[in-house]
Amino acid sequence: MSAINIRTAIPGPLSAAWEQRRRNAVPSGAGSATPVFIASGEGAVLEDLDGNTYLDFAGGIGCMNVGHRAPAVVEAVQQQMERFTHLCFSVTPYDAYVRLAEELNRRSPGSFAKKTMLVSTGVEAVENAVKIARAYTKRPAVIAFEDAFHGRTLLGMTLTSKVRPYKAGLGPFAPEVYRIPYAYCYRCSEPSRYPECEVRCAGALEDAFRHTVEATSVAAVLVEPVLGEGGFVSPPAAYFQKLRDICSQRGIVLIVDEVQTGYGRTGTFFACEQLGLEPDIVVTAKSIAAGLPLGAVTGRAEIMDAPAPGAIGGTYVGNPLACEAALAVLKIVDEQHLVERASQIGEWIGHRTRAYASAFPLIGEIRGRGAMRAFELVRDRDTREAAKQETEEIIRYCWHRGVIVLPAGTRGNVIRLLLPLVITDEQLDEGFSVLEAALASVGAPVPVAVFDSGNRMRKE
Ligand SMILES: Cc1ncc(COP(=O)(O)O)c(C=O)c1O
Image (tube, rainbow, N blue to C red; front, side):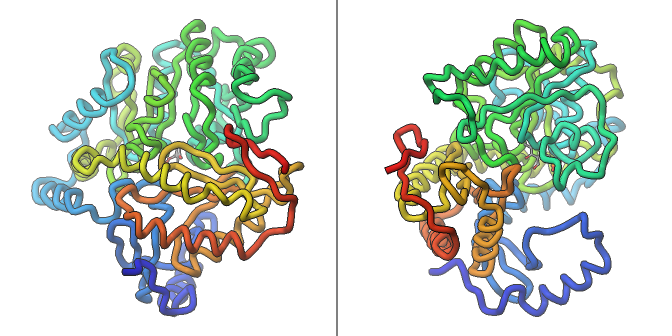
């Protein structure tokens, strides 16, 4: 049975009417990617107010690994609703917070003693990780990467790389944030390629200590294991090993931002695991609680204990409804083997997209880990000119035909897939048929090319 059912022009009359009211009531800065208002969701399917159904390849930006309205999550939240909805952990604590902290300590990479604090969002997790690293090292500076995304608060947007729309006109920014290039292999200017290049680009960190900020002033290096908003760029494990070694030698706290990669999406519970990477602190959010507002900072116990009591926290952090949802999510991930399912989805996509480079001239690179897959689209495979407008057209085509999909990348030319891991193979097939029709519908003619075994473009 088809999951997609488009019965009206998009947006339908009810969505269009709400869009009008929204324009009057909500600032344009709080924008939405699609013009359809949603009535309900189930698994990987969304239904809008006009009765149109869509496959959700966005998952509320990667929050719905366990799918919409997962019964165990709904039940856990309903049961907690019957007990209490809020207490404030810093006034009267409750056990769900502690149980979740224990689970995250156990599951996070590294065999050392760990502790977890809970927050409400991804950016709050990032900010607290930075505060904790500063308290521990007694140093001020943070090093972040080009093309990184870490959120929209003052420190968050400072740590984020992309200027438009996240930073332009919104300064001044937080001090003591320095930026170095990320290992973006597809756009690397080095003559040699990985593994011949030996990830010399990781040396940018040591270079920064010579040119920009002294190592003894640096509290933390903050890095995504796969760029999220930056376009699913996924450097080799050797890159992260080099960063790890430099941080260890220099007494710098390595913070890994797994807000978008965590909870199985990349085919391991944390992306760090497949990279053999043990961060000092890992931050999570998004799929942690199936969309209920929750984030977590998990790290080495001695680092996490550095701030004084009361220095980190907040009124709503670790909300009990969200904690119960998160505990239910962990159960679902285990019982439904969603980590393994993410690998299967990755393999399924790899198989399905094998011929894309020859079929669709716009394809520059297909990349990612596990179910976290993206296509970078270019107008010309030699110059790698970003196909931003074409990307927007493809995305619009998709949601007009029943697939909700998101752009990414600093150049706006990446299509990223953040589908619920509970999606069925039939739904994947249906969604990819739409995506393929969309890719076929646009694109300037460019020379035919294929990819080599390292997934790098090679001219025929
Ligand atoms: C890698 C990463 N870090 C941090 C954030 C910020 O999370 P939030 O939007 O929950 O504040 C995001 C959000 O997309 C993200 O992808």
